[in-house]
Image 1 (cartoon, rainbow, N blue to C red):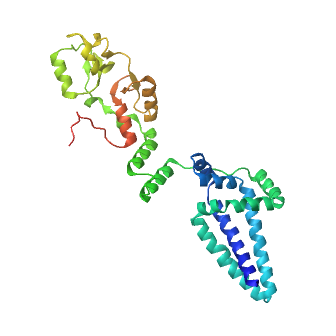
Image 2 (image 1 turned 180 degrees about the vertical axis):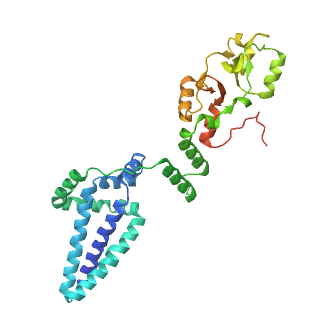
Image 3 (image 1 turned 45 degrees about the vertical axis):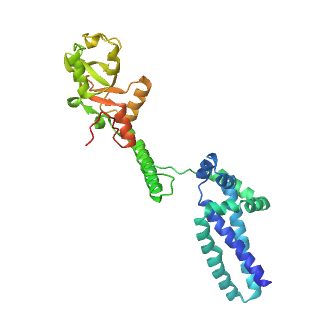
Length: 320
């Protein structure tokens, strides 16, 4: 009978010790988020874990009580020195180290399956633990949520991809990294410089030679200038040229030529430009200096490529 009581007290010590580390290794904010996403186990644990100080005082009170009882009980069986040494060895090994190591590695499983027991213990011990927990809540406030920098989030995503359990694949990792970085990328870093941009004079006439020139490039939009290349005055939409009259000047095209265009600065961030494009419903922006000199163009495709970290190629692109 003595051995049964000793084992029972030691098991209780292991439970309280292991649950203390197990429950508090789980972030209350992570549990709340997973519960909102439909994780039933997280929801069950969160209902207990959200009352952090109440849970902590209950576990610590239980642990101290059974450890004290175990030491006293062993002292009644054997001499004081032997009882102290035996109790210390048993509690250290089987009541602390082993359960904490095991429970910490399987915190979610343990927390979920021990939840009914914890609810009973919290109610039973509440006359003692509730006042202490209330004072701690007032003194310490709520638990501070974990805050991650963009670099840390990127590292977490990379680690999840390396685990290879199907939660994050390589394409998702690449896109997440691109999405987190593109807002700090400047227009000048991704724009097409004016030396590589095909532009047309506003007086250019819509004829066979012009159609042949367009077919060489196969772009959907072209900047239109007046006088000199630095003076961009509009944008030409290739698809709308089909309904225009022959031999008219580009600036006379009613549907294909638009004098209203989006203009951005080279030092603007891509997230700002993306917001402007979405708001104005334009896929191309003219990059100009503060003195309105033409520097190049940036397209919605350029920004998307930065986000997905991959070139978008269509049937007209030449792939090496």
